[in-house]
Image (cartoon, rainbow, N blue to C red; front, side, top):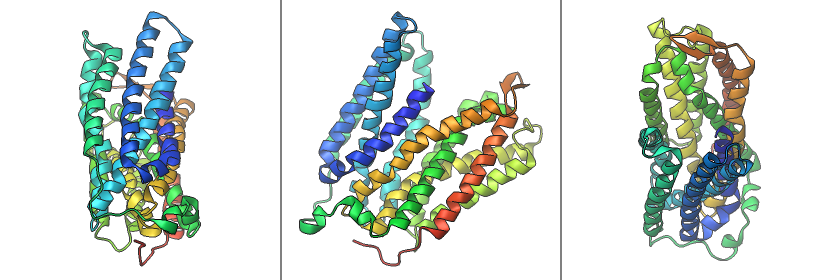
Length: 385
């Protein structure tokens, strides 16, 4: 399922990039597309898992899972991600960061809420994995359809008309292309590094001797993920330049990554409590920064390119998420498989050298992202309406 998940993230970002104009024109149509595709993707995944169980080693089952879980559900995620963002930015006109934070935080909070429920259903003898997907399809369809019916823009908002409405998204971006490249690059790197570390998170926790607490700590990191989405974006509302938040995220990520690298915290196996604390703080900081990077993108884009095309521009920027979905997890997996070796720590087979090597790569990438934030994304003193 690892590649299926990577494909889901890829199609999430790419569908957002190509369907951004539909979201811009009609949020009800886009939210309905999101509801149908997401629920259909889950139900289709359930069917092909069940089919694969009855037909061992079936290529049809594997392809079906990739199409349903990757493509169809990914399209639902992409349009569903974009649909509420601009709407909440309009409702929170004076605190756009808070609006986007509330919207994007739902993605992080869902992990903390849904993960233990899904794990319990998957391990239940009466439910199992394919029935779990059928149940999730039904539950998510009801909740998303209710959201689709409730979603609306403020009565005072009037979509731009005439020449402004007809302005093409790429023409708007061309007014300040260097800034867009900078935002895209630092967004891509932040996601790649976040996915690289988060994908190895449970194994790192086991490596430092906390295997029995892995589930609980994963829920705590999910809370930091959601908290970063809301906290960093709300904080950015009080800053003259929202890009300051990205500088803060990258500096914190570099500092804590470097501390764990130079102290060999992961290889310590939890024998030193101070080094153990540093590793946990790194996981918390990266999760919070990963979440905060998501929630600040639409508001930073609106500061530089205005609100009239924000859904379309935001959608194009999410192509960074699509590509990172194929590089983040897979990069970390490749590194762990090719550096170091498996050793037994507290009864669990782990690769501390591999995890430490992942940190070397992410630290360098965070430095590049910080440079992009400083030199490419310059502060715009006056935002466009």
